[in-house]
Image (cartoon, rainbow, N blue to C red):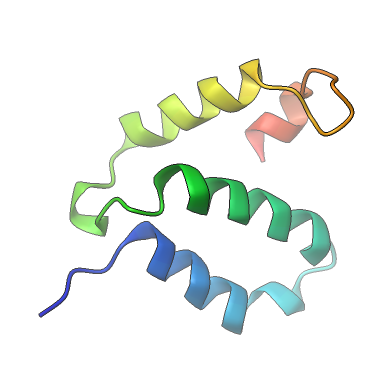
Length: 76
């Protein structure tokens, strides 16, 4: 039996739930970022510290315009 990964979970969410959200275009960009960063991790190894590391990395990175990301973007 193959273990599910974060990428599998994100793909399912995109396929079944994303279009129901008002801000689905913005959310898709966020989900793709997480998929690229942590998509390879199996759900059995997915812990709070993984999310915290991603949050910290995201807060230190720049957006497509070269600006630092706002705290509200990082928290979503």
